[in-house]
Image (cartoon, one colour):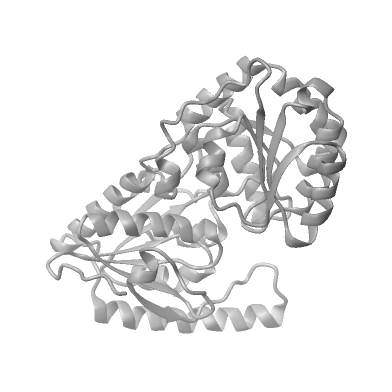
Length: 379
């Protein structure tokens, strides 16, 4: 189904693709802009899969794009060629569609479109999901009109762009934002202790290996109260289940957790990777977390995300190098035995989270689009 759009409203093109970390904020922004009456379009690369939600309802254009990082010389040369062709394709498309604003969400899929926008008299905005500016956005930053960020302190910004930076926060799904006012359930008395384990879009084997063993090593009285919900890879599911069953630990396991908003709201503590979407959702709901950055993420950006949370007193970072069953068990015993500390950390997480990030980003886009539509374009 294609959205019927108001021909009188400015057209905003979104440039997104790749992982959920780039697509989720694009989807949240698209929904907000749709509600405001803007006309919308999506430009993505030809390898992108089908989109859902509002993104799946708007006109989609596919162009060539190619990532460069981590590739051989031959593949890098091919990717540069694809980026050049994709940029020309995007330039031709933007000249025909005449959008008032183009918004990019990082990743190689957005580069050709944002480069093309910078070559035209079109308002351009990029959104950065992480605490470290990604490589694609680093390449584009100096050419853009506005740079929307998810964290108040950003690393990797080029010189001379400070006046372009606007803190919006990381847009999250509406189902997550709706849990913003759900009170934190204090871990007092002899009630259940709800632990939520998230490993990103496909789970994480290291969490499946360490967390069950750590819970078995915990103080017996605390362990008997634990109810864990854990996302696992398909190949890890059976082994994790056997471990929990053998140790009499109540557990709900799945490769995909369909009710993440509800599980987040009811969690006393979360153990997770430090991807942008995961961190934003945890902070929006306001829950204490132990974050284990994926050590092989590009430029180690998850470590910067986790450090930002840790520095704000909103959670704790545990590098994967020290993420052992013994260390995690000691940390869990300490935290779950101190409900006042968990509550204080939950308050800090809540203060750091931004449930209105989609609206704030839409305000930036609306400002730029209105400026362009009125003829006040950049030279």
